[in-house]
Image (cartoon, rainbow, N blue to C red):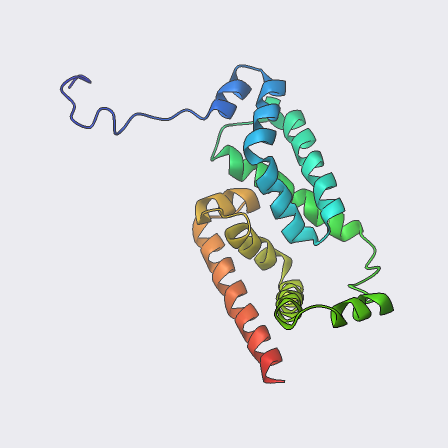
Length: 193
């Protein structure tokens, strides 16, 4: 059957990712520039969610793009560019967390406490909820924390999470599910106190 007689002809047309096309053409600088434009903000948000520090997140997001540029010659084109970039980001953030001295462990300076006294009740409550969620995230296994963060902060589908974490899609679903159940338990235990 030729394309003219095929009623599904256009529906089955394969869309070519422009970044992947640039990589295949060997135009790696153009590809990384397009990665930065299309995925830079989302990479920054993901790094922020994983690291909890805006300065470190910006630094790591740049490192991700540099690593992506360096790895483009070996890019195999399996999965999405977004999943590939987020996999690099996840690994870079994990290394940053491993090497970060557990300094400040969310130290609360005296002047921070006095600043909280000036916050309206709704903002103070929102800040405290966010702190409880971050503390619950920190209590998860790193693999589960990564999976739930990739799902809800980065907005990846389970297949892309699998690609980013080097696991099967079903395993990604299980990790997210376990992480959510554990967080729900941790947060409800704290609310009961």
